[in-house]
Image (cartoon, rainbow, N blue to C red):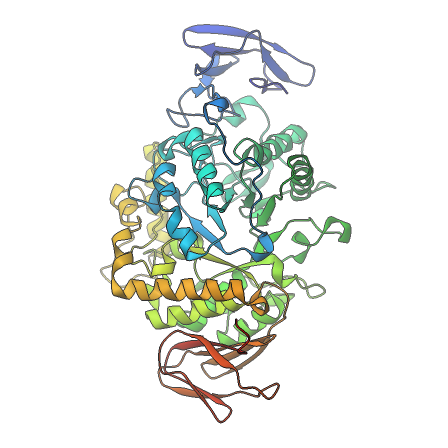
Length: 579
């Protein structure tokens, strides 16, 4: 449909309000309404539906006054793109860096984040993954309480700020992936039901009514979602999308929404002549998400692998609360390294159900692995990072297995220098009742897990948000420099050593009591997680003893077929072939 058309199939009257002027709109037979004249460039406007409103444009790209304010017509030509001929780095060789624009810098804007790109380039990452940047309630939040899906958050710098940021990333060789939310809508600022049947009461979700993906009117709801996905890739030149919680798409149609998005993005990729990536988050461990459509799959490029994270987290911290009770540390980490998912048709005690498929395993190179991410840090009561739960040497061991494993590795902001700032859950809901509900719900959720005298940080509090900002001054201190060098060395080694690329050499893994050995082609990774020095016997495959390419601390030695490692140490060995 033409820009500024609006779908309101059940409305008797729709008009556009531009300033003090009301512009009549004409209805088509399909329920779309078209104004008699368009608003001028930069004009504020909204829609009156059956006399109510004005409401923001459901497809507005610019909401300078927030989710409750009028929409503003965006002149996209105000940004002059400089990325002609751009092609992102190969997603198959990616090292991804997840960041939250609001806390990545003290300013919390796209322009401020762009000033840190040299740090990321020097680190060696290839792609940035932005947590959601669409317009959400208030000035601060994670962005998963979706409201104005097409608009770019005003506090971050709005749509032109995002364009400048993506352009700057491309200029430094960095691809940009955006986290998008299509599994639910937020409780505040969601005016879509005023226009049409975007929600359905046929299904219920944790967030209330489900999005209408398969009922009456669902064709246009799906069109709304697919157009949103295409907008980010086309209008904003993004290189990929991370689809949040696709297991929340309640959809029994013959062509699932996930498949439709995949097909339409593939068509856009052909038209644009540059690769576009789709990454799914799912708790179902379904390999079909990343299988090709020709093989009966959905055709997405990558999928997050929580099983790897959970097994590694238990091995490093010994935590067994909640879903961590399903994981046995190193033994399950070995399973994840060999076959991708720990739960592939296996009973999970915390869910009291079988999870995954026993008849299929995912291609390892199509899985994204992580030691930390926004969920696994921010969904803890105190926003604890791995370095808060285990010592820094164990965190280095975790980084070693992440960066040498068969998956696409992802780093969470600040992880590379062992940032001390937590990443807490924070909101800025403008509805007082909703704010109280979130605050009380957070306290109830974690009441049994906190030590006496501890309190859950107030998600509505400004201080909670400020505490979550990275402290870049830490990067220059010696302790943090040590971690940063380790990450740079690991990423550099992964880039130079073909045996460590994603997929390729399927890992051969051995585990013992607090130690693990992983072979990938000619490369070998040895981890000692115990609190004392350990000698691990290594069976050589050939006549040449491997050289020690990297070690997380000094004191690693090779003698008589055994590798001696100090406590809490990771080492990567390989042939002396100029690697």
